[in-house]
Every structure is written in C-alpha cells, then in structure tokens.
Image (cartoon, rainbow, N blue to C red):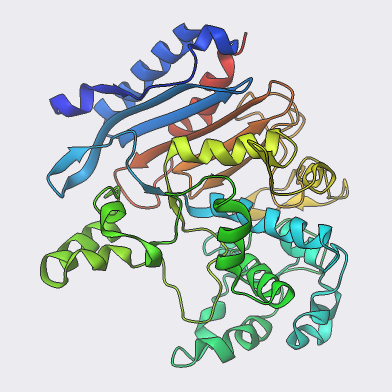
Length: 401
C-alpha cells in the first residue's frame, strides 16, 4: 500500500458528529475498515459524506486513483466519480414532478406517450412498471443468464434515435407486466423519453433545470457536459477509464468526457452515468428529507416525494435476478429497506437507497433524519464485494445515537 493510500483526508464540515447525534468512534472504525480493504487490494479508494439533523458532519476520502491522472494520485474529497445507477433517483423524481404538474400519472399506459408500445403485452406496461422494474422489459445484462437479451442488437446504430424504441419492442418481454421484479436499464431510458415528451425539452435538461440547479448541485453533470476543470478532477477508476486516459494522451483531455458505457445519440441518458461528489449528493438527500425543498427553494411537493417511501409492489412480486426468488419492497424509483427481506445490511426500517454498479450508494433515512453518499472504487471493473458495499452501509448506520 502506498503512503498516499494510508492518508485519511477530511474536508471541513458544518458540525461535529456528536452535535449531529452520531458516535464519532464508528467513523474511526470505518476509516480503518476501508484502509484494510485497500490494503487487501479489494478497492482503490473509499469516501463518504454524511448529513444528519440539518448538518454535514463527515466528508472523508481515503485511497488512490487507479493510476496517476493530471499529476494526482489521491482520491480527494472533491474528486468527481460516476454515480452510475444512482442517477435513476433523479429520473424518478423528475417523473413524480411531472405527475405533480398534472402532465402524467403512474398507472398511465406507456403507449399513450410512445405509440410503439401499442402492441402485444407492451400495451399493458405503465409508467409505474418502468419506475419499479416490473415491466418485464429487457433486463440488465447478466441478471437473467438463462434468458439473456440484448435489445441494442436490433437497433440501427447509424440511426439510433429512430430505431431504439423499435429494437426494445422487438426484443420482447421476460415476464408479464407487473409479474416480477427484473432490473432494467433500458426501462429508465424509456422513462427519459417520456420526460422529454411530457416536458417538451430533453430529459437531461429537465433534470438539470428542475433538480440539479435548484439543489445547488453545480458539480453534478453528464460527462458530455464536463468543463476542463471538472475533467481534471475525475476519478480514474477502471479499465474503461484507463482506456480514456490513453486516448487523452493523443486526443486531449476532452476524451475523458466520453460516457463510461455506450450511449447513442437520441437516447436519453436517464439510467445513470452522471458525475458527482459525495458531498454534493447530500444536497439531493437534504432536499428529499426536507419535503422537497432545498434551503428555501421548492423542487417538488412532499406528497409526490412521499411515493419514494411507498411500497408499490404487490406481496407476490419477487426479485428474480441472479437466481434469486426473494421478496422486495420498492417505491416509485428506489428500494425501501426492510429487515423482512434484506439481511445483508442493517439500516433503519424504511430507509430508501440506490446503488450505482455496486461502487457507490445513496441513502436517505426519514426516521433518523440522515442522508449518506459513499463510494468504493474496485480495482477491476464490475467487481463487487459485500464488505465494501453492504458492510460499509451497516457500519455507517451503527453510529447513530
């Protein structure tokens, strides 16, 4: 382990842990826990930011980038990392805001916005099915190995804008709408298309104008919109990023603005992929826990926002990905933690959260008035380790007094 890996970097906070009702000794334990994971070669870095009872009381970064970048080897408190599928939370809130504005409703058939869905069982898919991953639409690659489907293989990559929705339809469904919980990335692309059609502007712009800007999330952005200053703070985390670094050497720093995963022009980037920091993601959590307002600015009403905490699934709906057949509670866009179904971590009953490719997690706990964002950069892309995800979440919740 390099000396820089052993350093624990603290940013200035608004309160001490004890003032926020938190046991500081648990953070000391967590720091040693993260250092051990780094020392074992399981992760490159770990960082977290914590907000409770109206104050940020921790903002900590430990470890290194996967390789030196722009003269920097350290993962710092202001290092920008890809939040992956945590970005789906923005998409869900955008849908709820459009509902609040009277432009759509959750049980509305998708075919009323996207005529291509007026066929077969697709005509029975609702906006809520998309939000809760119960539409039956093409699963995330690897989730259903016995029924693997690649919707993009049916798309004309020379004309993605006019062919991607037809490709999704051609791929068919894994299950009847509303029958099973099957995690789907493309379902959130479709929600982005609905956001665009309902609002009259690109979904990314709607999210930026109505969520990011009023929440003072100035650093949170899609890679394609990055400034040079932001690019210089990017986390070089995995093999894809390393390839981008080599491209930068020949083509300039702008090459780092390319998306980590394939994107196609005309397909909304609403399934994740934004860059942010742990500290800035607390703004989102504060807004959620303050009933839809961020420091005097109204983003969304508390009744619409409450649907994030409302279980939308019937008891018979099971999570069937990766060979599971387990119960699950899911709100209008986020999992709801319950000890009844999830024994991999210990949170407060009813905490909402979302993982991002297993490398980062956003959580909001109404009971304890606490929101958290943490990330652990794995040394290999698509790696996952219980201790670096569920273990860290449990340790974080163990400090609540």
